[in-house]
Amino acid sequence: MTDELDTAEPKPEPAKQPRKRVRRSTLIAGIVALVLIAAGPIIAWQVTASNMQPQIDSANAAVAATGDSLKQAQTNLTSMQAQVAKAAKDEADVAARESAVTARETAVKAAETIVQAGQFGDGVHVVGTDVQPGVYHVNSATNCYYVFKDGTGAGANIIDNNIVSGPVTITLKQGDNLTTSRCGTWTKIG
Image (cartoon, rainbow, N blue to C red; front, side):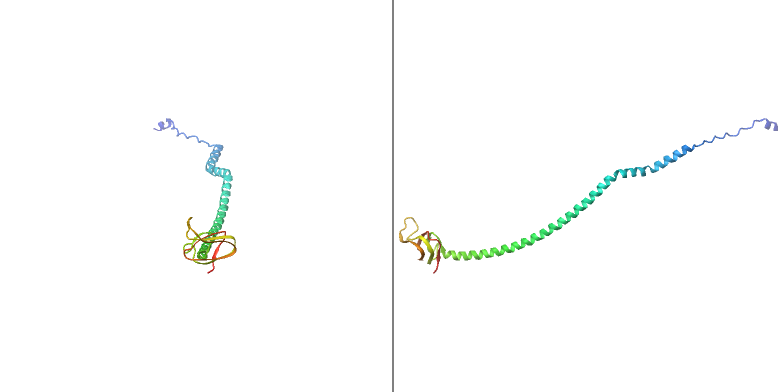
């Protein structure tokens, strides 16, 4: 058996796989690729950010301008609120003055009614209806014509008539019918 052992061919050892050498340039290329893949978004962001800077600056300027516009609008609003408050005060003042004027007008109308009851001008007047009975006077008249009639119609008869210049005084009794022309205003004196 020893012979057999000697004669037997030695068994070949399993073959070793030759080691693959990684080239240094391939390794460097791989590392650079990894770095570029990892740094790509950062680089792209920087490129995008630098491209966007004019738009960012424009947006910042628009925000600043809007802030200025807002400040101006606030100033305008404050001014308008002051004007509204002044207008409300003015309106209250006008209402108070209007009330005072209305009171004065009422007093003046009452006085005018009293005066008018004691005054009349040219035209046809029925004493007791249009004018009060009493003594009336005109300070100065030129060619003043007055006539007392027994009625107011076209067929009324003349009771008395005169044409006068200068001061004139007449007495009116209840029921008299008087027509005057060119005499001016007659004022009650008694």
